[in-house]
Amino acid sequence: MLKRFYHTLDEVGTDEAGRGCLAGPVTAAALILPKDFKNVMLNDSKQLSENKRTILKPIIEQSAVCFGVAHIFPEEIDKINILNASILAMHKAIDQLTDDLKFIIVDGNRFKPYHDIPFECIIKGDSKYMSIAAASVLAKTYRDGYMEQLHEEFPMYNWKKNKGYPTKEHREAIREYGITKYHRKSFRQLPEQLTLKL
Image (cartoon, rainbow, N blue to C red; front, side, top):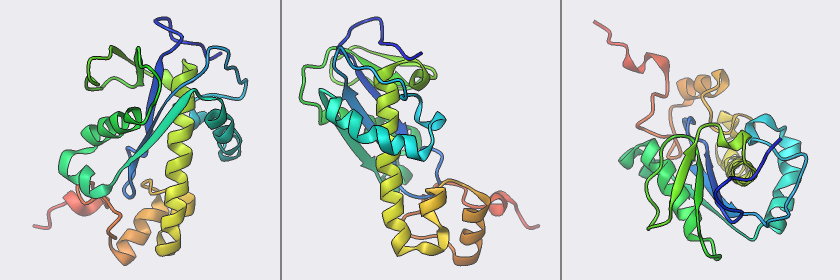
């Protein structure tokens, strides 16, 4: 059963999606839920079917006191690394919030201070707290939607299905067609990339 964080009922929940992908942005969402928000379907986005995430997205958007979503794209990821890019995406999502921010709860174990607002990192927070779970759903659905748009430009990678993750199908397409401007050049695209031929 998801619950509220114990510090305050007005906490900002934030989470990201796409950190382990070979292509596309890392996407973060941040939001504040109203004090009386309840939804029995809401859970960590990774535990939900695509259909349930699609159903939840407008419910979360309409119910939230405020929310923000931000993408950090491959060129920036390659410059600052994926951890920094994930945190930057969360900061940019929080930038969009219009309400008074009192406390931030973050999924995972790494974050950088956002102005002078206190925060706490929570391992598996997206399966424990409503605001993080809701942020995880928004981050995942917005990123998936973006990857489905990119699929129209590069259908051979089947991003509408694998969303840029390192599936066997995706890697076989990279092997055959090479990489695109949407691939993260700092990532190991194929297993043999680090194998020396002596």
